[in-house]
Length: 102
Image 1 (cartoon, rainbow, N blue to C red):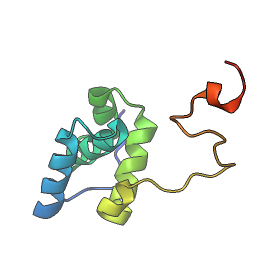
Image 2: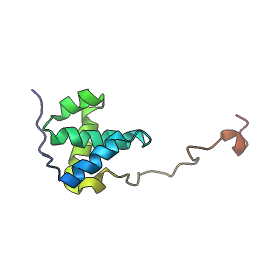
Image 3: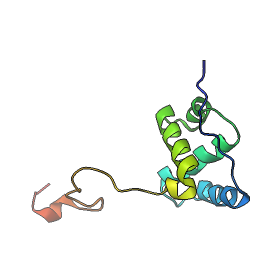
């Protein structure tokens, strides 16, 4: 039996417009597009399982972003600092420049 989320999303017109723009931006980071799509589908009343299947995303991810949006609205979809030790290399780092010889 599918689970029902306790987080019901009702969007304002402004939020809907912003999320539609985010979901259509192919130049955006993929995870930002997915977050917008999750919230848009949740606002239509779809369950987390249905959204996860439609977007080929784990249900736990859908649940996380639905909850964060419900509590924090649009600002909840932004990146937050991650725990743990900072990365040693930037994503654009070329290991050959670090003297590793790789």
